[in-house]
Length: 221
Image 1 (cartoon, rainbow, N blue to C red):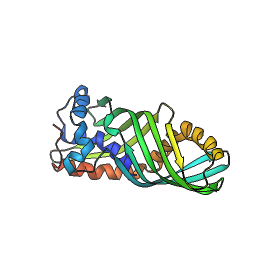
Image 2: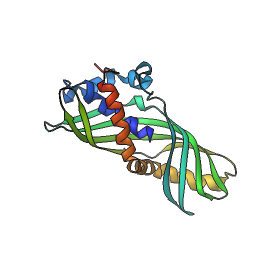
Image 3: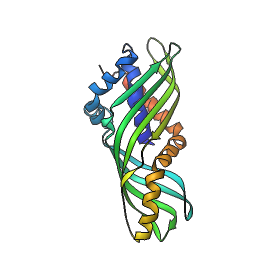
């Protein structure tokens, strides 16, 4: 899933072209390159703000039973508003990074199987709040290459989702009264679920970015 893959890329990018940056200076490097991450380093890489995702699916338990929802044409705006960075690297190549993002605006289309209250889909807008992204993994370095292994991502949503809007055919007050509170409390866990489902794709996508950056496409310092 491209959204989660790019979150990984932002972190891992530091290790490719910032070998001499101490852990306590990582935050400074991130903040220095805030606009570069947002605009894709002037087009060298895809933009991080907004992030555009083709589609991903989640499974949810609702008062009407279990449903599978597929989100399509999703945009995430505000990732470059990250305000806190913590990092740790060890001599054996293990690394861990924690990024805090105050809020991200999410918008896209969704379909639901089976339909609920005669609603099979619609448009969704929401604000994701107080987001912490934890990324950990291993690195193997040589004179000419850097290889990342066992990259794992955990996304924690510490506050309820707000500003939820649902629009579409057959959406009624009953539907809104049921699903707006449900999404407010469960949206974070559903997106975290997607992180696990798409973990292998995340790792592959990160590797592609690392190769590009190692070849000198982008310089952070």
